[in-house]
Amino acid sequence: MKKMVDYSIFSKLKFGVIIRSIEERTEKLCYESCLQVMPESNIHIIKNLYPSYKAHDKTFQIGIENRYDWYLALDADIIPLPDWLDIIAKKIEKLKNSNFFTFSHAVYDKFLGKVDRGNHCYNGKYGIQAREVIKHFARKQLKPEAAIKHYMQDISSCHFPEKLFGYHSFEQYYKDIYYQFWNRQRRRPPTELKNIFLNQCEKCRSFDNDYEVALMGWNSFRLKDRILSKYFPKQSLPLKDFHEKIKKNLMQSGITEKGACELSYESFLKKYSLPIQSCHDTTE
Image (tube, rainbow, N blue to C red):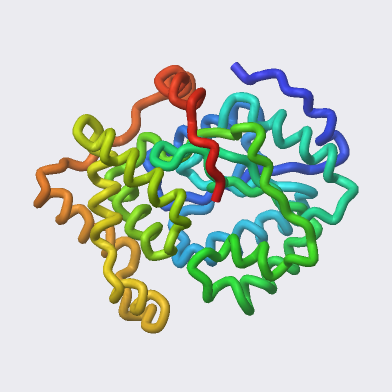
């Protein structure tokens, strides 16, 4: 049953959701959470575009083609909370007449606590400009979405940490957890987040393989990986081949990959109703 939402802000503004997926285990859950409060025609899924700048470019392309006034770009490893559309609507109401390019909210990450990750609401009037930034600058960066905001710094963007938007990195495949923290090492995370991650893994690795695998990915990063990705990208393994390498590493460690996620959205929220109440107050 769809939740009744105050949709008045969208009576004159066209709004859409664009989910970016590389076949995350929670893709269906992410989509289901949006379908609770959004018409299906306004929900789009971008699948398996890599490198990631291509998915970001496609996001703006969809926004332009559908003439959205605002649209939410959502990674498929994010599971929004039931009131996510209310949160977005209230912010758009405040910002609709401003020059804001984008805003995001805090999510509760399984490994890091409260972080800014995987959700950006974009102002549709800047889509063409954003694609130009990707074409000339952001496609060369390790963090394309952050680079887009940086190169459009004359237009306001903001992170709102006061209200949690959803969950991040729960119920993921081991291969994706491994890759996530291999990649996070490559991006040189802030010391505070690094310490939170390592402490959390030490506490939980004995009873939750997610943390053990996250450490495996973290510790597998080598300097040559950074050199290859930055200066010789054609010699770096494609993501699909990298995942195959990860699977072999997991098998050698006696860890069997998870099957498909069978949780419904309602079941997911019941399962993880407690941890979100006591997350670290840390943003990135």
